[in-house]
Image (cartoon, rainbow, N blue to C red; front, top):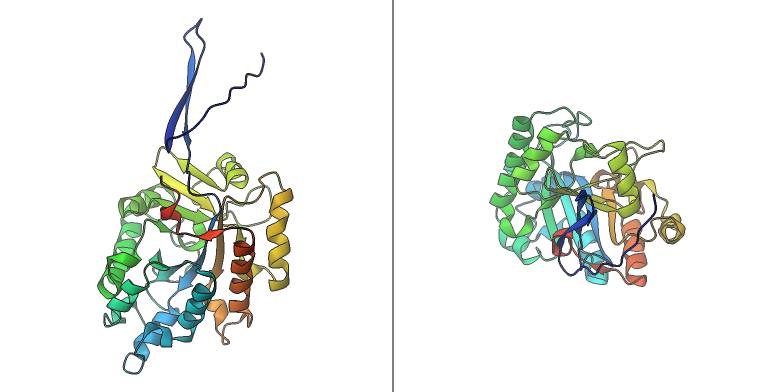
Length: 309
């Protein structure tokens, strides 16, 4: 009938706590993870990437470097200024169906490898449409698309740009689909985990209770499926540039406090003037976000560099 409190020191990544009634033998066990390196780290993740790859493929005869492409050049400049690490989630096919990753040349493979310390590529979805493509997809369908994209990345960029983290298009994936991406080597999935608000869940198969947990902690592991979920701290294309710093500062006054790991999310298509929601301050938003992170002591790191040990 009371509340009991104990101080416990964690040294290991994986910990099992047991609370036991010495009189009855009744016991409750829970697993607690202590990621020693995750606090004070950040990255930029960009969804829906395909157009910059199509541009490079189209200009393969004239682009001597990947960074002759203005989109990648802009990202490189932000990295050079703030050491920001950037993760790009890829479509296989362009919106109009006129380009696929199979058409991207492997002639830049060495350059991908040279920049793999700050630039990552991963599976996102086969294409932009339909919306929520994997919400009700089978294990086989997800595995097929994932293997297709990962296989192409290996072909043209090599193993070093791949990692065990991705974001699935629309953040919707049932348990069977999640098992498919886990089998492909992805240990962590990014999402919004909206709950008790009007926002789209973007939370895979997580329950309301689990989403509420994510709102408080930003990171949580589903022991049953061996998948780590990470909550994005801010969607930059839905945030005005002048509001970025204030909204990040506001976390300090929220019950959750400042995010231990900051993931800034943005989508590729907002960079292009012909897109209906074109944002001319695209790179300024990313730069402002990186500046806030640097000014608050956050250091660049990919999730797998700090969340799994």
